Image (cartoon, rainbow, N blue to C red):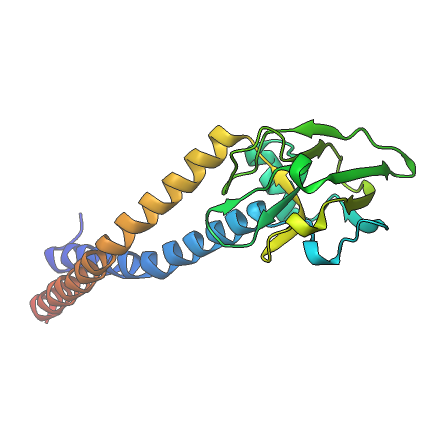
Length: 222
């Protein structure tokens, strides 16, 4: 059997390690949340964009989209499923942007995928963070990892283009999964930041208790 002083030493080490792990947990969790935020922003970012002012009614503007193949994108696909890609014209206002009516702007598009024909479907389905009062906001298509999509885009009613309008190709993920992820991330990070000072304080307290127990064990062993 362990002597009393050795048993106290083991307990002291265990308490001290628990305290240190509690303190280390805080920067680790902050790093994890930051990584999740970067993934979320990547999921919401356009794959191609150009100012709507650059589109002219008498000529087409070419947009090239290459469906991503990198590790971060593969993780997003694993988590959210393969997204549809949406070509639309929208404001660039930030967290909640307005998508403009494709018919009202005279938005016309056609394209190719890997050199072959591309099936562009008129859509009213919007990516996350975008809203619209129009039933037709743009065109939707699909592309597998590594596909090269060449889009020819023009607007016949350029006088109706708002000053902040941007032509974009955006991924449209599973809306239910995106909603759960975004809300869960926001709530989880908020609660964690509230609890972080308590966790650090508990870690410091445990390390102090471990030090006290170790000191008593050392004295009893002498």
